[in-house]
Image 1: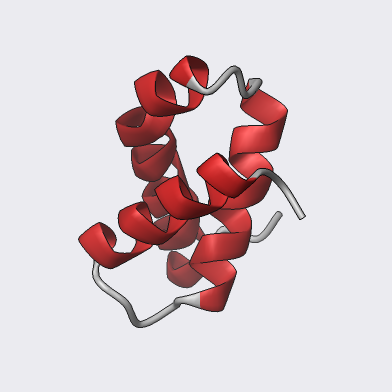
Image 2: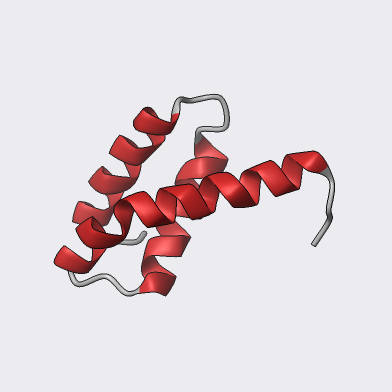
Length: 67
């Protein structure tokens, strides 16, 4: 893993999303690995979106399930 500022920011953003979505994901019965896969994919798909937009998209994908 690189220590450049962009990757550090990305890791922090993903961790923040994981914390925000933890209870929601557990309520759906998702384990941490499934949640991380969804969160990382949403972050990659929506790099310029707001946190709230990414959180909404991640919740929607969690309801549907991992692709």
